[in-house]
Length: 430
Image 1 (cartoon, one colour):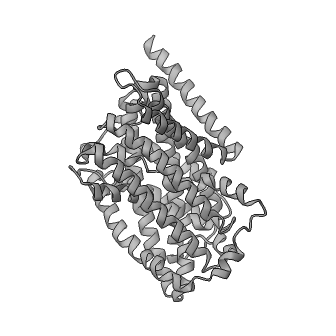
Image 2 (image 1 turned 180 degrees about the vertical axis):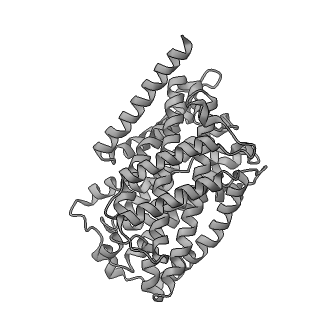
Image 3 (image 1 turned 45 degrees about the vertical axis):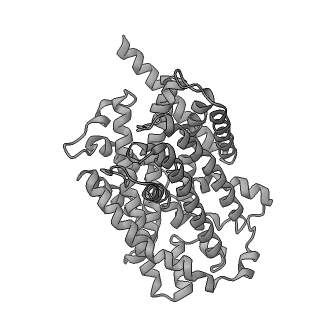
């Protein structure tokens, strides 16, 4: 996360913190995943942005009552009790390190273009594991070093891509875009709703405005501005880039690419642009991976301090890094990378992000419930209930758009985690 050691930031900087925490691997690899459906997914981006705004409003509202938010447990337990606080906190933590795998997939998908190696499954697996353990090692140096590294990656990583978004319209072919409007063989409505879950991966991080409310000046006013402003900036960038790319390169080529932005750059400017854009995208995605591994370590430590995870996750080094907790997370990510290996980059990426969305929606749904029900000493107002109900409807649409097998897997993870927590809690009590 890019907010380490920041004090009293204003609404503009807070807005870009939220936007930056969302614009990552989804920006660079989702065009390949969505190209299998076609340009119709532009409507999915619009609907996904609306859902993100509704959920962001819920978190902005909670930040008003809980200005020192550090964990979902802070707003869930007062309204829904300790068990629900455990589920929201741990599902968010699990979703963060599963999401880190998806970021590693995207980062190496671009990086492999620059290396004298093939693009086979085992090469990609090896590259992903190298990135995971390199970012683990960097995190051991402490939060300050990660913040500096991520800031560098943001500046160097997004500038060349911005050139494509600005100059790409000169190469845009409206006929090519219209011809690829819906190549899925399904109805338009079916494609729009089935694309919601993978698209929403790009908006995970919308809650970070509320989570850093304690370092924002006048949080009651500025956190809603930062949250909704960051979501809208990210939504516009996503929509523009998706439409632009499908009007420059045929969707079948995009769908098969491990680096769609580099492919589009080559089509626009020639072969010389491909390694430049690939390097920029790989750098930005790697910076995002380092930042979200920091988030994973910090959220795991907070969960351990609340008794939700084993104490080893809460052990912090002198520089503030969660060394042992991150080591166990890196091991888990290594195993997950092996289990989700797929013939194509977009296939592996889609599997991972669907898992993430199912788990993170559980934490988002508890935010809606907390607003809807209120808490002792914080009765729900009419506006709270309206926003809370809207958040629950948004979560319901995301669940509806998720494949049944993924939903069942998420439910099993949640039930097993709750059973283990209750069982070990009883043993400690005895």
